Image (cartoon, rainbow, N blue to C red; front, side):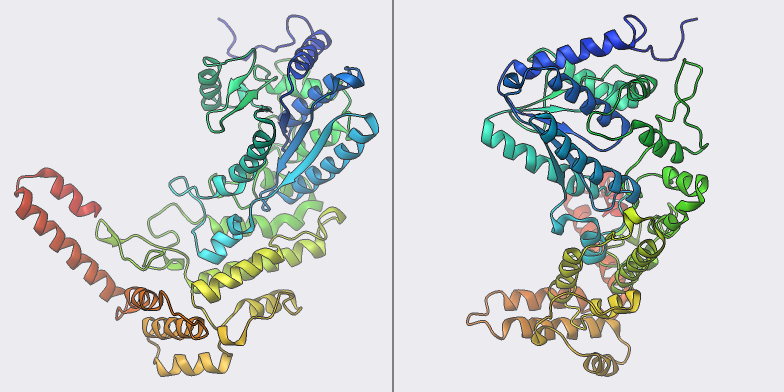
Length: 504
């Protein structure tokens, strides 16, 4: 029977001859035109192998033929695994220094999401629930937008760009299908059009390599920008569930190529196996335990009521929507958002106090993010008690270092307590009055109070209910009235009406 194991690209010509052939191909593509290159670098094994091949190919060219820039881009989502984030940051610094010393046209760029797009601004600030397969709001904001902005800027300056990526067919069946689809429409030798970015092409020099091929290359060829690939192997070994990551010598030897690094807050996977393995395999990494615990709290049980207690019964705009006679939960409540902020700050204090030197100054949440979160809470959500500075001091033990807000935008603790007393525990009433006070303060200094009446109408729309049960009753009445109207219009026999009744 034929083996189901993927065949090594080194099986025919051998390791060294195959690598020389790949480097010649890279050099030929590089010198074929004036289109700048953008190499994607994550710090993992595949992107390291690709960049190492490109670096070696450029080094083989005479200086006068190194005519166009090669941009190495690494997207830091700001919630990367701290160990990997520190590794990548140091790697980029080493690349910049080594490229200058070796006379190579390589420049390293650390890309980050816009602060308004960051994970904590959306989750803690706006109240977006932790990402899930049907509400995957994170990938585009944290990863795609930063790299798209950079690549677009290169295309605008030069007309075209070539993306060099470490994508491999062996990563997954889905990745293989995508690569095969693009391969059928290649317009130049080894270059595929980028379906998302006009005037850009994709080159994947290790697309047919196996996991074992990647490690074999990295262990046999020295890293040209001064890093030791054995340290990378050790990082993968520490992140492997079984703790084993041997040097691959034949097809019977297991590989640690399936280790996965990513955002430590990721709730799109069932478990963060790499972080679990790091903590289990190395006692010195127990400082990461609060991060793993916080990640697990962000990922509630996959049940209809998994995180319902943390979320508002209203959607972001105040509407109440039903599904099978139950409200579709909306954003995190104010109390939940405040709790998430406190937990992140406490985890940050723990990492800074007990982590290794490389992560002692880490910001799990940056001051810029805190400032945007504070503005969203006070200005957009009208939480004029301005609780963020108090939470920061309680969690860290030091005063909040951000700017001072205009006193006209906030209320003091005594005033808030008095307002709550006057509302006699009616939370809907309290939220409505608080929002109306906030709107009045925001508009009182304006010469023209454009939009004030619309804002007041929206405030009443969000909070005029007597409570959650009243809101649900009204939503059911609206649904039933709409269903009755459709039945009168289309007739009782229309089967879609019955289906829509439960889904509306």
